[in-house]
Image 1: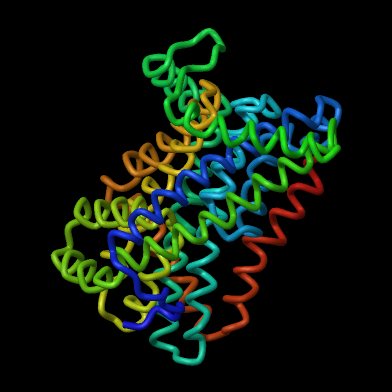
Image 2: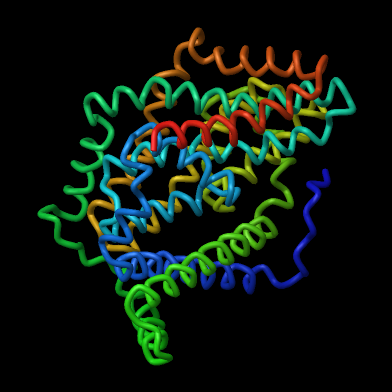
Length: 377
């Protein structure tokens, strides 16, 4: 089934695999550059830049907006990890942003489902398959964010795991990944200084370089990993999901998302399958939950590159949040069915009044977060 993306030029699979490894290394260099640039800005600039995210709900909305703008939770969570590693924001401020990124990442497959708006049956199935991801993540945030703010149970558990893995005391751990990426970052810092850029300007240049590298490499990683693994993806997913096993479906979402470094690709591939009636909404649903967990691997890798225990704590918190959401809601049918019923109900309304689908997408992912940030900043 065509996915609507230009197929990368043919090259030997082993060459493409080596290319992906090299791109992943450059991605980690970009994360380290971002960290170095933020440190170079100075504390006053940092405080002004992130003044609007002192409120946890503002942080949640910022996480949504940032992810919608870059169309990638991998980019936004890697950026958050870099900010924590640089000391710009703390773990408590970062956790709501991470949860917001979980919601924001669902916009891609929701937009993809709008392509079938002129074909009622296909649109109903595809839009429901897209928004079930939205509703589960919103439900998880609605329940777990207040508990986190009241008890810090997620961040405390993540800090405990981080301490067991790398130690505590605020010292940076000796990450092999950090040592690998440290040298080229130092070269770039020296080069920027050599051309006469220093102080705050140097920090800005390093941030821009870091973001360009992060954006570019993630796009190329996704494109090339898709060429490596996704040619048979739809057929394999279909065969597995027809068996109706929730755990198997979660494993599919987890593995493929880790492989392509994008939950948006995994969930967006589900849309044409759902629209065509090949896979049911109930079989697609657990795939999205596995994708939620799989996408956290990017933040975990980024945190290892920074060498910061706080950054690792935030990355582990992201993973624990998604696992906890599954553990709390999925085993119980009455709770598991809530996102399905909401998605089916909204899809039925959208079929009768198609503008509702567009209003929902813009309102949920743009207007509400913007209003929230404006009020709570």
